[in-house]
Length: 118
Image (cartoon, rainbow, N blue to C red; front, side):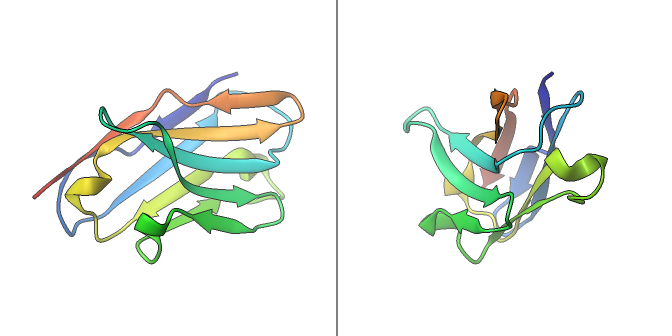
């Protein structure tokens, strides 16, 4: 089973993008779904996470601009995670990775590139 991330691209500063991530097959329900990003200058950092109970956490740099959500917890989309990114800044540029933690282990998506031009 793999996580398939999509939605990255090139956008001007102030614009919006919506990232999606879903598993390619059936897996155990996630304890936590999260998005990380990585740039050549920095280590991979947590952008946002959402727990099975719905608690959310954001990096200070994205609070008020990004929103993490998950698919219908009662349906097949319960392990799907989204990241709505608004008011994008050049500093948001990077490769975004989704992560799913479950009792079967940790899964990572392949990464989707987000480039924000000034």
